[in-house]
Length: 102
Image (cartoon, rainbow, N blue to C red; front, side, top):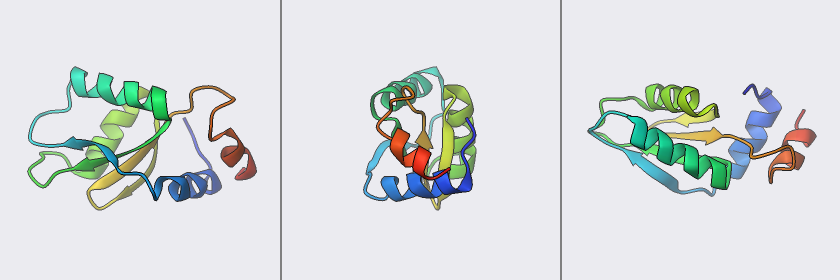
């Protein structure tokens, strides 16, 4: 999924108040983690994740891996946190935000 820079900015603003829903630690990102992230994206559309200090992944690596596996767009990577977005439908909760930011 491709987002314009304005759409990314609008989604970053919406993600400011989010708490991380997953923490990525020592283990590999496998099918169970990918499925859990996909389920969360299906329910919420916009989620924040955190990579712990002991992880073998950087936030960018984890974001790219999970975005590719789930079909989501990586909205932002800052430090050890990143934001993924996957709209449910054209009538998603963020449809107005995305349309206004085109």
